[in-house]
Image (cartoon, rainbow, N blue to C red; front, side):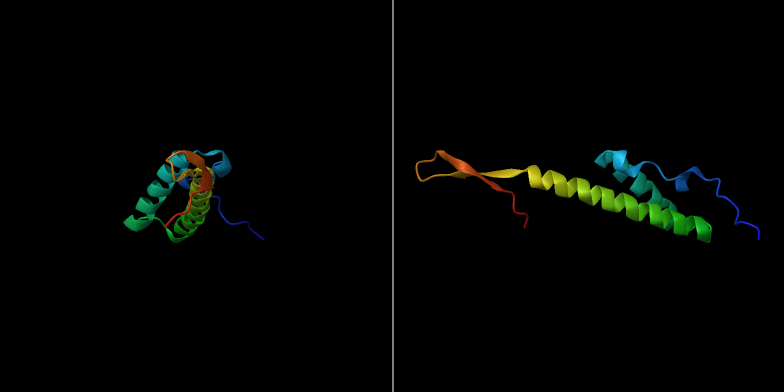
Length: 91
């Protein structure tokens, strides 16, 4: 049995996604979206790009969730003094 041909494009080579900063992961994701939207990628490359894009999207979301968890809202008492902090609540 003959193995399928290997892809030579650097866009589909999977980087160490967990090591990417939010900004780097977002830039890569934007590049992938642009390539997919152009319609120029052959089917298998498009599938590989979609898979990599989904991994990058999850990494970006995890980074955003971690940042949100670190943000705290300062609570003020009746006299205007700081009474403590509470976790940030989006929305």
